[in-house]
Amino acid sequence: MLSIFFIKRPIFATVIALLTVIAGGVCIVILPIQEYPDVTPPTVMVSANYVGANAFTVEETVTRPLEDQINGVKGMIYMDSSSTSSGSSSITVYFEPGYDLDIATVDVQNRVAMATPQLPAEVKQQGVIVDKQTPSIVCFVAVTGDENYDDKFLSNFVNINVLDELRRIPGVGKASNMGEKKYSIRVWLNPDRIKSLGLSPAEIISSIQSQNKQAAIGRIGAAPTYENQQIEFVLTTEGRLNQVREFENIIVKFKASSNKSVGDFRDR
Image 1 (cartoon, rainbow, N blue to C red):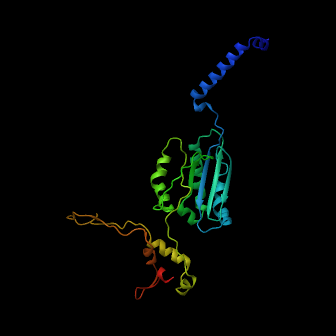
Image 2 (tube, rainbow, N blue to C red):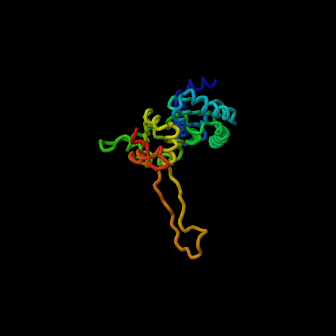
Image 3 (cartoon, rainbow, N blue to C red):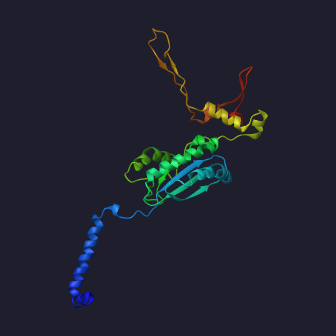
């Protein structure tokens, strides 16, 4: 009977349809975003780096111990992982839609802390990163320059001036430099030379680490001292090396009798 009523009154039916469309359009604009269902599962990413290891080693020594501890964390529905030949390990943990992402991050961080003692020393030294993320990329921002600014300069500029501003925008979960190029020093070893000096790669690495660090060396005039001591000096020294020539002057072996250097990176 209702259908016959509208069939016999087409103008009235058209007006009702138009009012319904207008009301729907108005509601779309004013409807709070909280009313939409949260269908995207919140995710937490765990990443680590094992320099010099292949994919199999990363899987066995880094990814698997982390997975064993993270598996079964409250609210988790599933997780996936990847281990690459570049030494990187990443685990993405997916939680139930609507689960509090802050609580999920804390729970995963606690599980990672339980697995940390099982990880190689190189991985623990660099740290395991636990970070909230969204499974989809919202926006790409491109930074370009002319011939006066190369890619390393632009990458460093983005890290210093752009990333922090993007991360402070409300609603942004993570911002990263996808083309990041870090300044670093690569040391090439001459096998014949280090063999003739009776050295091993581990000893050379230890020499670099011991002579390339920032350290607090203390104060002069600090208590306990003489009662009439009135001046106190904070001692400073050269910290981390930042020039190639400074790395070339690292002493890797010397004779204790004459204190004369018999090998450094310039002899490679």
